[in-house]
Length: 136
Length: 131
Image 1 (tube, rainbow over the protein chains, first blue to last red):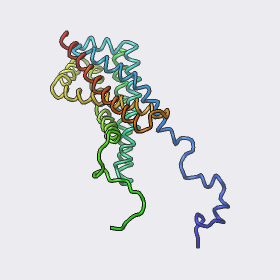
Image 2 (image 1 turned 135 degrees about the vertical axis):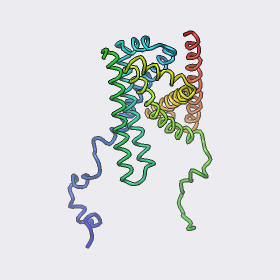
Image 3 (image 1 turned 45 degrees about the vertical axis):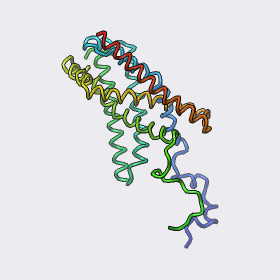
Image 4 (image 1 turned 120 degrees about the vertical axis):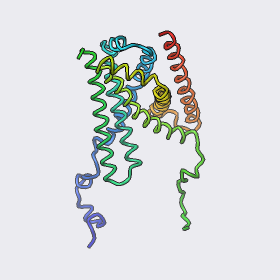
């Protein structure tokens, strides 16, 4: 007996919705690509600001550093940098795992672990900046 | 081995490296390096949030030969990934996709990454010497 996919008559009887179902989302297919671009655009000025700041702060003591990161503009820029960098990193590492980790089990496990690590490190970074800024 | 009458993709191990392919994989490699490097950034910030002693320990680690080596690799990776990333953003607009331009922008990106790294470290040493 021919299956419905190889039977031309049966294929004609399937509705457009039926043919599209299960093939993946028609709305979020470019989400990964798009967010990778948005975060990269944000990271161009943010990373240059970050390197310039770190260079300017070389040899700074604790008080100087805390006063700097605790003031509004550096604190906001640092939090934006952390969010953009970890989002960008999570998207990038995801593709690397998808390309190089073979076997569905290991791949899924690696993707879950990388997401959790990125989220945890991002939250830790944002919390650290806010704690200094709000004088925890 | 059976003959196949269709063009086959050359295997990576017998394929001569070109600027375009080398820069492509190097962008991924530096990206992975930066992902790992963010651990150092978070450690630095959490140390500052913890207190003066923890921050002092973080600073002395960053100031050690291992810390400076990590920072050197981290800063070079950042500028490299940044330069390659800007090249990618230009491609996304549809610009510069012909072979000649990919070579030109490739070398510009390599030069930019090296120059920015050198400038950052010279500035760093000047500021370091004044503290």
